[in-house]
Each structure stands twice: as C-alpha cells, then as structure tokens.
Image (cartoon, rainbow, N blue to C red; front, side, top):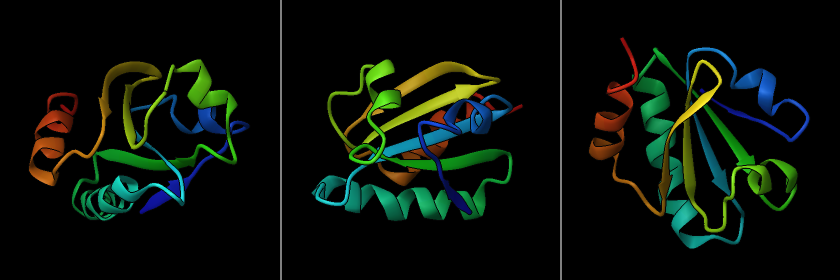
Length: 103
C-alpha cells in the first residue's frame, strides 16, 4: 500500500526503516508512468514503506530536499536520505536499488 503524505507528517512517516517517497503531480506525464511501478513494488516489498507526495499541494518538503524535477524518488533509511532518483525508474532497477538498503 502507498500512503499519501504531506509537509506536516512527512518527517514522522519517513523516520523509521527504509522508505521510498514518490514526489509527483497530477499534470506530470512521467509521474503517471512511475506511479504504477511504485504501486506494484509496494505490493511486493513488505520490508519497504512506500509514500507519495503531491508537490503542488506540498511545497515545503520538496524545496527542503532540492527537488526540481518530477518524478523524483527519495529513499530514506532510518530518517537519513540514502538515494535520490530523478525521472522515470523501471521496476527492476528500482527493486535492485531498494534491495541495497534492506537487510
């Protein structure tokens, strides 16, 4: 399951374990391609938490992390950013990257 997060709850929702945040917007074409990939991985990878943030409705968090293009996938482990992927990332590649951070 992918949870929607906001500027208000982002820190709490992403402070423990391995968390992938999908920064997206409704008008973004590549985001519409990335979203099903994230949804599918959320079903397959129990050891990773998946969250999404609409950058139009939440501008503080993307600004804090220097997100200039979407989709951007931010991977945090125990509250620390360990990876940042800009643009569409295929499922196999994304799974490979996430597996580096799970034990």
